Image (tube, rainbow, N blue to C red):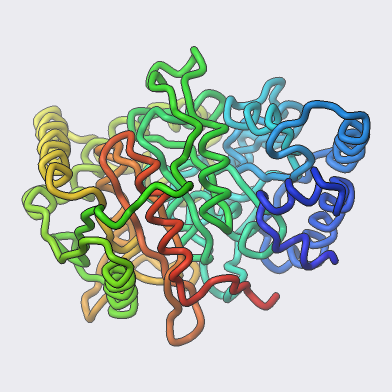
Length: 468
């Protein structure tokens, strides 16, 4: 039964526990056994949470005693190692924070626990969550469970690998430019970056530039994303950007979707895209069209006018350097290569910074205009499937591009704060997952989740797992 438990989604596990078909202790033990069996090859888990099995046994006693339990009672979850976890090390992928044990939980972690979930482990990331691959000097490199010679993405790459490999049913990640959706696409799972401010960033580091950071759920099913999003969203009184309450009704019921208007694109100024990725997006568009939605190819002039990667670079060099410089002062020899690169990048001039700010405003206006005509946008998550470890450049559709080009299709929605979801819909010729991305207007998470659930039901790659 262990394999069944480790690849059941969190919603199913909660039901098994609630109805007595499995105990929380059995579920937690199955995941601990899975971690022992496969983490040596993936290096996704970096710290086990002491007392997870004791917490599971306590959850079983509470249920047997008739306690009023939460929707995730007794279900294990994992969290990226940038989320503070009370009594469990949060080391942020850096020797500078080695052995750091917070006294309190990040808001997102606390809300998961309040719903009855049990913290199982912490997952790997790049140092300070800054890069597209999860590698650092403290806890090393995470390997993709579909192909150990490839990356599981960054910065939530440990989380994505853990869920894909059956070590966790549900996880917490964060996203500045690609860090939830890209790793999800690389490993064949799903992730939701909700509207900026929906999920508080309290207890997550770094917070700068907080106007673009997002926290969100990662899972193997859309219904798990919907459940976890509903539990985590809403203001906490500490994060000033988190001021919009969320309705816990995630819209996965019987509400019709046939009248929804979906535009899809592959390029639209975003640069080259791998042919198999492009074909998967087109296949997803066709599946939605066949299901009765109004689907058509589109282009978005705002994406063609202002390059989102350029806007991002000009803004974030200035905004990320101060917190990194502060924590590394006098310990620069302990920094990983990408943090060194960040601090060595020339400052953006005031003129260029203001111009980038104006470009982001134009981008927001352009999307506001787009969503006057359409309910959803369908496009690639990443411009290529999971790549080999340590590459500094990629060849995409015959063109050589820098490594950060992989995020050209995700960055626009961090800059604008629009909600975006990543899910698998295809497979490369050599067996790697390919994802597609759904984007909706601000605060329309229910629309994304409803259409994602439909697309999941139409997917040609449901219930496929890596052979570890």
